[in-house]
Amino acid sequence: VDDLHALLAAADLPVPVVLVAHSMGGLIARQFAQTHPGEVAGIVFVDAFPAEMHEAMGDLWNGYAELLDRPGTPFDDDPGWEVFDLDESIDAVVGGPVVPDVPMFVISKTEPFPLPEDRAALSAVLESAWVATAQDLVMLGTRTPHLLATGSDHYVQVRDPDLVAGAALIVIERIRGASG
Image (cartoon, rainbow, N blue to C red):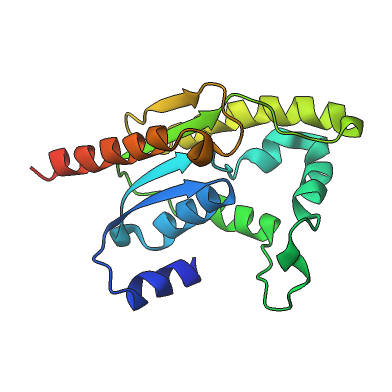
């Protein structure tokens, strides 16, 4: 959140902005809106990670968090690579102020996450929790549309970029309509 705030200032971008956030970026966008409400005009959540996921996963949370924390990119060994403390971020969002009432849009995948076969029980709970907690994102705003990206995996912005762009345009039009 601090990095995003600094980036917007360094880029001298006019605020408020529309944030389009995928996956863990959704958690960051939500906390950014809570922390800097005057700088956010709208949010598009693209198969975004909801803070309520921890609770929705129940006893399987630790197994899921372990999967999220596993190394998997060439950057993992880079000492400058930023570490993301998921539990701390969730606590900050859940314990933070209310998200401002700005136009929002939620897009969700329909295809399952590709988990290892030995994680079948985790997979079933994850898919159910992901669907249920997407509603938590919808409930953050007023009249928030929720679209399913039929046939898409988690990377909706890659599989259906026009859908993501269209959602952003709808949020922008709602902002323009609200400002008269």
